[in-house]
Length: 50
Image 1 (cartoon, rainbow, N blue to C red):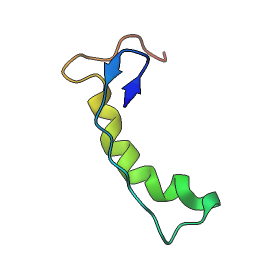
Image 2: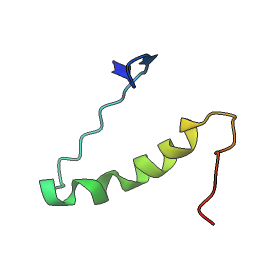
Image 3: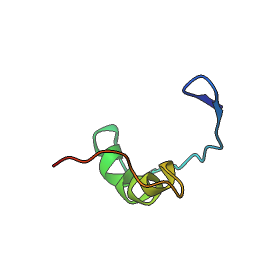
Image 4: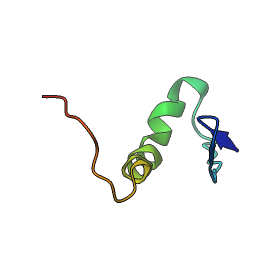
């Protein structure tokens, strides 16, 4: 799979059979929160919200 036009990425499909379309985001939240820190690898995030 290509992301941002140039990056190769491994993807993992998670199924949430007990979640309806409307509840999919809530069901996936734990996986999302564990994945977000991996986006920058060892680099600290740039910028801040302050």
